[in-house]
Image (cartoon, helix red, strand yellow):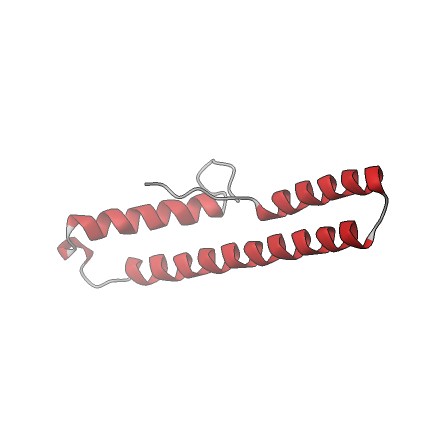
Length: 100
């Protein structure tokens, strides 16, 4: 099945907006400030993990693309290679999609 991706920067911004709304309702408290910082950190960490996975996918695709005899690959391996190429293109915004 195709992988779904999340724009963690966008998610972090949304959570920060919600926290600011909460702060507007209850005031800037230790709790609201802590919640804001924790959400931002969690999403920043997820964004780094997403970028790392993208880099790893690029490395795998690059290595496979230089294989000596790809014509000898079983169909399942070719399918996985094609899926990885598509995912890299999607993540980099090179397939006409939104990217991430």
